[in-house]
Image (cartoon, rainbow, N blue to C red):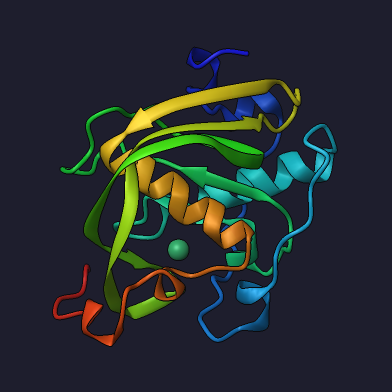
Length: 185
Ligand SMILES: [Zn+2]
């Protein structure tokens, strides 16, 4: 198990070209159902991974996308926080299957948003030091990702999607939810 080989997602190298899929918005039922485990070596999983990355890349400000958001009830998500100002550690663009939190410490409250909840943001308490275990699509290689700060937040947000949870389910109360004042182009 390693940390390094998570990085460098290469669609062409893996032979799957991503398609841009429609992103579901709350209260779509698929967003609130726990997703199923997935076989990371299934060619369909590799295609799904490529589709998630392609859809994330065309969505302004998007730092992660989970399969339930594109109507697929499987435990797969992609993350890329490299360009975000709140990022410290970044593993670049990567996709994890069947990911689970192994260790988490130092919880901190911060504002987050979601493509599936486009009009709101919320203050959510998340661990800022995180260890996550999962499998890479294609090879099925088991990997461990150790990260912090904004990438840790993004990972917890996507793992939540795979469990049927939105950030709205994590906010302390209604005062912690805000209307989005500005929109990205
Ligand atoms: Zn989200």
